Image (cartoon, helix red, strand yellow):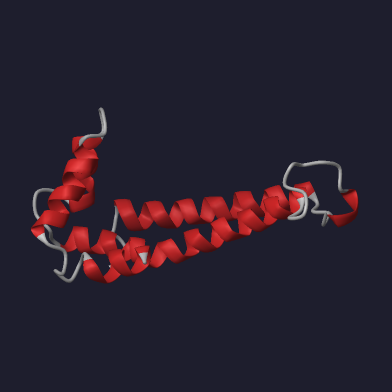
Length: 128
């Protein structure tokens, strides 16, 4: 639902002025960074190409964020086991993960996603 909202509802005008006002008021209530955050999300004082590019970027990035959260959930599920939520000793049901490769892969994916997100959100027209 979040990806549909960011990719279709916001950019193509189905969002009312009331919705924009609610989003603006909620974000501007954040201390210290609220007004800057509002200007960044809307791309300034009017909705133009930069704003639409940000909305489309979130539309395509959110499924990967959701998939990453599901993978982290599975990793921690195997850490304790679904039949042992209190964390008691249950070595028989654990799936062993080599910590070096797990951390290395997570760091590599984090750096890749951070690079792509910063490229898309801070310089949306850089790649043409």
